[in-house]
Image (cartoon, rainbow, N blue to C red; front, top):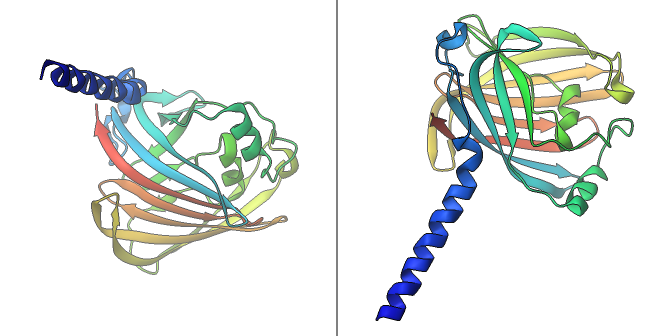
Length: 250
C-alpha cells in the first residue's frame, strides 16, 4: 500500500512538472496595461492567442506546431501606431528536422535564414481596420507573397476591397515584387475548432497576384476572437492551415 502511494505521488509530481514546463514560456510574459493600445477591439494588451499551424508541401505534412501571439501593450518598434505582438514558436525541432523542413523551401536566397523561437510584429486594431502581419519566420516565410490578414469595417456579405504592396529588400527572389491583392466577404458561417464554437464568422477570400503567380488566403474572422482560421495556398503549391487553439487572458 505504501509502495503504491509512492508511485501515485511520483506520477502526480511528474505530471505537475510537465505542466509547468509546457507553460513556462507563457508564465514569463509581461505586458503593459497602461497603454494607448488598450482600446483595441480584439487584440487587447495581455491577451495571448495560441494557434495550431500545419504546413504541407506536395501532399506531405511538413510540420505541425503551436504558435503563440501575445499582445504586449507596447507600440511596435518599427511603427509605434501599431500594437506590438510577440510571436512565440513553440516547437523544439532538432537540427535534422529543421534541415528537412528547409529542403522544401521555395526561395533559395533566404532559405537558410536562422531559425527563431521568438519575434515581434505589429497589429492594427481599431473601429476601421483590422490588420495583422502574417506568421513569416522559419518555414512560413512564403506568407510574404500571399495576402496579408486584413478586415475593413463594416463587413457584409459581398463586400470587396483591394490593396497593393511592394515587397522590400531582404526577400531574395521576391525583392521589389508588387502584390495586387483582392479581398471579398463570401459568407457568414460558424466553425468548431478544438471543441470551441465560433458562431457567425465572416469568411473572407483573398488572392495576391504578382509576376511569380497567384497565392490565396481564406480567412474566418470572428468579431470577438479575431482571426480564428487561415487557409493559405501558395503559388508554388505549399498549403498552410492555422487555427485558433485557445485564448489566454494574463
